[in-house]
Length: 315
Image (tube, rainbow, N blue to C red; front, side):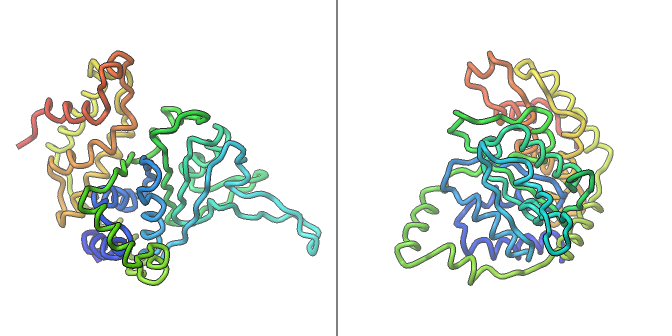
């Protein structure tokens, strides 16, 4: 099935347990289509974990959730060598990272050493224990959550590590009608955990996902779009409110996301609107604002919007 058909099938299943959140879900699916990892930012109780579980179930992918805490060790994530008394040898016991979709819950709550173990696995798609590499399953997709309101006792990710995430997706509150619908359904006996197990059905598998990824790779990008995107990326480094702009890797990820977004719209070519549609999630965790800009209340999304307005769209 095409990327658009696959998305519609998954959305119909996820919609059985998630009310609203269409934009975050679409952005998460874009990450799957281009094989990139996602930062999820949202307050507690907005269904971040449920989203990840529902997507994994609808694609028949293995799922693992790791709760990051200050005492979590790298081996608690990657696995460790354990003694086998029967064979009188040591064998490797896989950690929770050995799943196709991994939810790294509150990644900024754990020390840098453990963060680095996860981020190395994300980049290399393998873990090395006692000098022996162990390949992670394919596809391998990490959703790392951040709590935007609690910073005490946290370990913020360095800029170089943030840049390894494809996008930062904001999961906000539902609108009034959606929240009212959740309350009414719950009063009528709607149990999302029961529905997840009984109602959310696998509508595709990893082979379907792989074919959709291959279709995205065939999406055409004309020279004018390349020039437009290059101008945007370079302009981020010249903005007076920004002290660190987008890297060349950011430009590469931006183009991949735009191609996936075009495929979700049923097109096999990228247009400027696709570049704009994914600009905020691709850039918001990569643009570091100057202190004076932050004091004025400026936020990365506003900078991105201003950037898009300042660069002429190719005709």
